[in-house]
Length: 301
Image 1 (cartoon, rainbow, N blue to C red):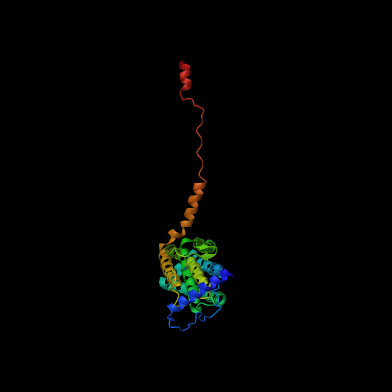
Image 2: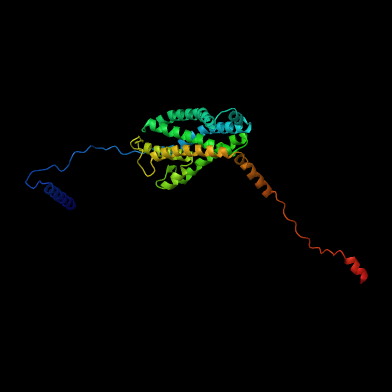
């Protein structure tokens, strides 16, 4: 009982001190409790979106493997069968030739990007701006097309290009494991993320993970908020556009390098084969051979 009385006096003293501090010393009774909206809805976080970024990146990457293989096969086959030389001899300019390739093959990449964004955005990125999500998908498709253009000069066989090119494109996405922990994107490491984003697959993985993080707290990303964060979504879009320009320029330059680049994988394979099949040197015989004039010396003795 005494403890309860002491607690009541302490609370009365606290109320009196608060009333005096709020200006109620003149005898006016001020309300101690103020109305607040209660209960306040808690900030919820959906655990699914911790893995949604890599999952979306993997799905879109798989959807582009077939177009990448088709582009590489077509480019290398035209070079292998001398079709491009016939077009250039016939008067077609090199710029017109590459522009036609960009338009014809770019239509397939654009179709994949638009269909993927239309199917994925309403369910996974419902709180984000649909046009922003569509821009991310389209820029990734454009950078992937230019990446395939840059790979084509290294092949002389269309079949080999259609097999190795998509595999290399997929392997570039595995660097994402350096920037995630338990499926969620790590904070910081801005320089490393920027360098890794020079690979189009890595840039898209990082962008999709940023979208998924904001979707997990039911915020989403819009054109006005895409600059927020240590490595914002705006940086990903800018780097994807830079990737497209860099790989297009690299493909143009490497294509003019000619036959030497296409023979590079063959030369490397030949060098490795000769290195692995090099015969081991024979051990010197321990038997002492007699000199040629040994019989003559024996007769003289």
